[in-house]
Image (cartoon, rainbow, N blue to C red; front, side):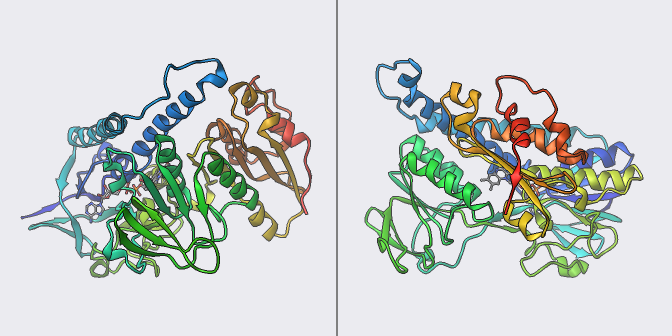
Length: 459
Ligand SMILES: Cc1cc2nc3c(=O)[nH]c(=O)nc-3n(C[C@H](O)[C@H](O)[C@H](O)COP(=O)(O)OP(=O)(O)OC[C@H]3O[C@@H](n4cnc5c(N)ncnc54)[C@H](O)[C@@H]3O)c2cc1C
């Protein structure tokens, strides 16, 4: 069977469904094709289930600390992992149903379930069906990288998807990969009661961040009893009677770690290898990311790529912003560009890391004169009151233009407080505007003007 539409959206992740909403509202007939779970990674195997689990882990952590706050429990808290998992599943299921229901109820939208691949630059195959449209929007996201480690085929390993199916607490979870995804799982399972070891090939955790941020995060995790093994350059895997042996022998330290379970968290790859992009003439880079211009158009007119698959972002908010850019340019006569957006993101360990813009290393590489300010959370009243004084606030400014170049808030509420800085960077006004603003007491944010008032040259 073949059908003709005004537009085809491949993938019901973070950009596809809202785009379908705008296109149909503009009077277009739209086909949305989803091969698996509506809502994509964020809703089903990413942000939503993990942050729900992080909340359970935080509850366990606070319960264990209860006596510090004068709250006495008769017995140490116990984790019912079946209920923990059920809570995360319910949150995801509700959001997934919302996305699917919204699309199915959308006037002008045809929902098709199955794997989509290009036949030509304007025809898509889904099983025996052929769908044709002059506009095709690719929103296929990505999946976990499974690295070719020696022994990988001889062991059972977990990924960010399969780990969510666990309704037990692993005895000893070895997390391979000390970056954003791996660290969230590491801390959460530690708080659920597992022994946890993080194995990182690089010389430090989350190497994209500044060294002081990496070091502080390592200290936070180690203080909770998580073992961290960095510089593990030659990781091997082998079956063991208790689970898995993770070989990390390189130059020093224990040659191997025996875990009951091993989680691979070494990065993501785009879902572009089975899309038939070559039949449409759409080009990708060497890692499979679809190449797009500043308006997210591919090299083929009429085909756009949005979200994780274009390599221009790796977050739900970047995927959603891609939708906003494409919709504005296509339907509202605007000329919005990806390169105009200011990147902010968070790492949801506890306390969280909120980030905006450049790291200090990136700011230094620009050759500008820099000013920087830093304040430990031990000198933030709200953090003291909450008994959560790990971390710091730091902000880096261009000394000449007075623009904030980057900031990190590692500390309680850091994921929310960072937005004050993100907003100011977006407005483009000098940092002094924020410095002179009157904040609310007691908050973490109230110290941002103070930090800005104490800037010193950064060598
Ligand atoms: C563990 C984890 C935690 C995360 N936490 C956060 C967080 O806290 N905050 C944040 O901002 N981001 C987070 N992310 C990242 C976030 O999930 C992604 O950036 C976001 O989901 C990307 O959205 P997307 O629309 O590009 O793709 P996706 O959400 O992956 O959606 C793509 C959809 O396309 C479908 N699809 C793929 N190929 C085809 C095909 N050929 N035919 C039909 N359908 C197809 C897929 O089934 C999927 O439903 C996390 C990711 C992980 C793995």
